[in-house]
Amino acid sequence: MIIDQEKSNQLWIQYTPGAGGRFTLVCCTTAENVGNWLPDPLPDPIEYTLKKFCGEDGTLHMKTETQPPYNIPWYTRQYPFTRGDNLTPQEVTENYMQDPTAKQHLLQNKLLANPWNKTYLPDWFNGKLLTIVSDENSHKWLMERRKQVFYRFKNGKAYLLRYMPDVIHNPHRLKMFKDHPQTEYDYTDQDKFVESDYHDKMEPGKGLNITLTDILNGDPNMIWDQIDDLLEMPIDRNWCTPALNTWRNRWAKG
Image 1 (tube, rainbow, N blue to C red):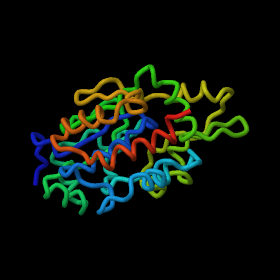
Image 2: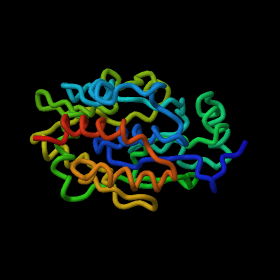
Image 3: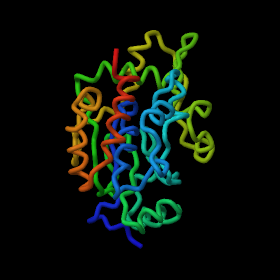
């Protein structure tokens, strides 16, 4: 089976880590034509969002957030890794078909929904794309959230938690490959260090573009209207709107 690029068998949300992309992607999977990341039947949106995305300790967020249902270690979605960038469409198909859940969703003609955190796209991707644009109005918020979730500062050392096994969901993945970035740095100012480690600012992409400011404060129905048009199928607003409001109350208020 070949993934039909013309039918856009893939759905990616491209976003700067910390910009709410994974949460937004979970909402997309409530559409009937997207492979589901959520339990069936759908759980209570407020309870689920509180449990998965709204923990009190931001540094544990990567352990608790919802994970893709697919086993896809053959490509990497975030900077600075490049594994899988140069695959052919045929190789992508063969890799996806090795995963039972991905294979099932493809045979059901559903979109495979996944996050993407790099500023570029691999040549083999030609699916549906939603980019959360890192606009200037949201920059201060984004830097503060990244500081809460992705870093630990102690005794003059800054630790990059995204690459440390004790705080991520799949620590065994780090042992599978040799491309390990540096995780410990000297620092003098927390805010300046977070800014210096900001390599993945998202500019408008080739698909649907929604600003991070709109994710934080925009009319939910305006967001859902655009996503419905992209997917050509409605998401479940009765689930997504209270989930979004819960996420915003934790991260976007105050």
